[in-house]
Image 1 (cartoon, rainbow, N blue to C red):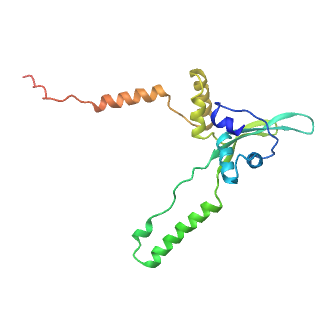
Image 2 (cartoon, rainbow, N blue to C red):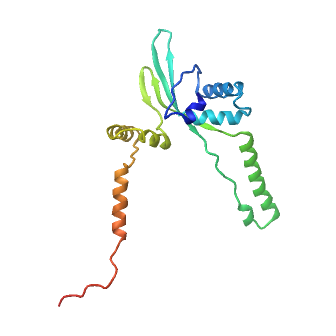
Image 3 (cartoon, one colour):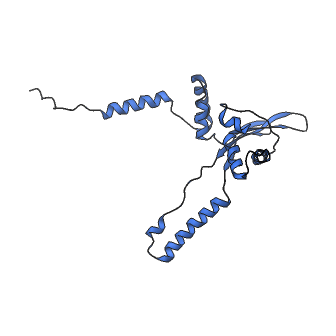
Length: 197
């Protein structure tokens, strides 16, 4: 499922019985390790996180009522280079050593406690009412819009604006603005016209 979701289709739907989102990631990672696809836990987890965009968690309560408890978005964490080269500005050996230790601490923290993803609930069920709790990430909004026709984009954009104050430009709007900027920047060259007396 993970392999086909990476290359074979625009989206993949599957079911799982994990109780929390981290449990889902761990269970899928462990399945990939057991299947022998990967030997390294971090690599297997990275592959899982790249595939999981949204988790729609269903619940069946003690009355037998089934409902969506939450919709969770998985956001892969990009590994950023946060090292500093400030040691070059330091005049003393002690200052240089302090900056080196800061970088070393950052390196070991990244190596041992590497956070591969974060997750946020987009929608939650509170006493039978659905509540929007966090906006969808910009990356997933763009991906979703790329797979919609014009009428769906209009409805989706209205939903984003109404609920989270997010306003994205349409491709046509960006094209028109770029054309307008180009016209403003373009000026005629040559002599100025003579004034009429």
